[in-house]
Image 1 (cartoon, helix red, strand yellow):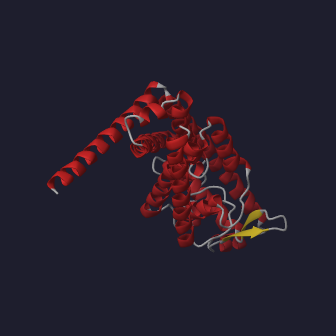
Image 2 (cartoon, one colour):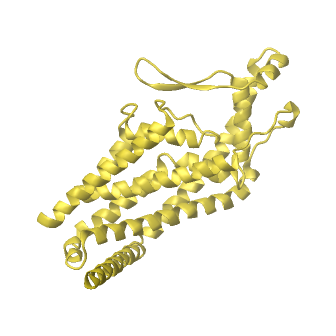
Image 3 (tube, one colour):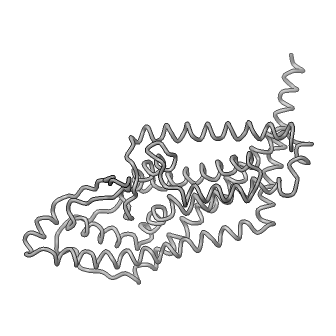
Length: 332
């Protein structure tokens, strides 16, 4: 019994050692191949493009507010509507296009100006970046990173060599840890950079006097901001890891990239229970206090959405790992 326990402990130590070696190899590869530098450059570019977008939104919000104000025949009616809340609703037309309707343009345009002003600050701009990049661009970048990391060993034929000294589980866990650490590093780099950029953005704003309307300023609460940041972090991690796992079962870099890009960018929302629509529901709930273009999605209960994401991730991960395990036995 004692010898059996010692053998188990020894196997556990060997497993951790091999996994750590794989983890270090993946980090070394990403630094040595300049992947880290490339993706740092891409994320930096995205943040500065986001800054231009935030400036344009702020200026357009002022124009929209003035235009909305001019529609009213008298100031009294405008001020009356300004003190009413508004609601947004998603309407599906005959061609299944989803449109967002606003029932009070006066208050909507006022809040639009307030929020756009806040976004040009060191605390507001990071939240804007999460809203601006968090649904498509960041998951897209991290997904491509996952595909590249997954298919590299196929390209150079090193999976077979690695399997001679490590189990497939040690290889996969080590690679996922390496990928996750790089995604976390890039994510926090984006947050820090956006805070710094937010310090200079007020110099490019076009402000109007909102104090005259005597309406309380609305800014996202700390909890809502934190929820958005964590939501996007989980989303990019899931996308990166799932892309990595799916590419393991596909083997081809070209096929994996094309399939990923087509699904994310070309294929429309496939229905209420489509993965993209489920993610949109979660993302919209997490980012509702942050200014941005309305997201066209089919409403779904938030609890159902979270459960569906967990189910989808579990099914896809299990299927990809089963296929990769078969590769290690027959066709690696």
